[in-house]
Length: 217
Image (cartoon, rainbow, N blue to C red; front, top):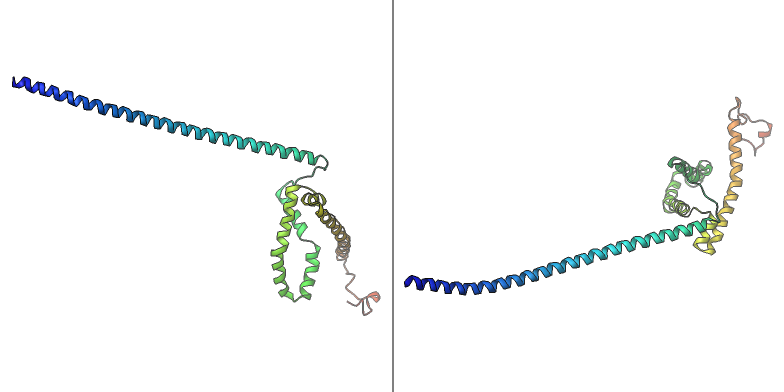
C-alpha cells in the first residue's frame, strides 16, 4: 500500500510537471515563432536593401552611359564643322615640342643682355620668382586648355564666353608679329653660322667699312 501510494503520488507529480512542460513548450514555440519572424523580417529587409542598392547601381550606370552617349553625340555634332586634329606620336615628341615652345632664341640671345643691364646675378631672383608664380602656371593652363578641347585659340575662347573671342584673335596677331622679327634673328643666326666656317672670319680685321667710330669693333 505504501508503495502504491508512492506511485500514485509520483504519478500525480508527473502530471503536474507535465503541465509545466506544456507551458514551457508553448513559450518555446512562441519564442521560436517570434525569432523566425524576426529573422524572416531581417532577411526581407536585407533583400530590400540589396534590391535598392542594385537598382541604384543600375540606374547610376544607365545615367552615366546616357550622359556619355549625349556627350559623344554633342562632340560628333560639334566636330562636324571643324577639321580633325592630329595627336602626338609619342611622349618624346611632346617633350621636344614643349622645349621648343618654352625655350627660344630670346632665352639664348636676350636673357644674358637683360641680366647684364639689370644687376647681373641679382636679376635671377625676380626672374625665378615670376617664372614660378606666373610663367609655369600660365603655360600649364594653356596646355590644359589645348589638351581638353583640342580647338584653336579663337574657337576655345569663344566657347568659354563669346566676349573672349578677341583673345584668340589677339594671340594670332601676337604670334604673327613675333614671327616677323624672329625670322630676322634666324636669318642673322644662319648667316653668322656659315660665316664662322671661313678660314678668315669677316669680323677678325677692321677693314675700311669697319674703321669709323660708329662701326668700330
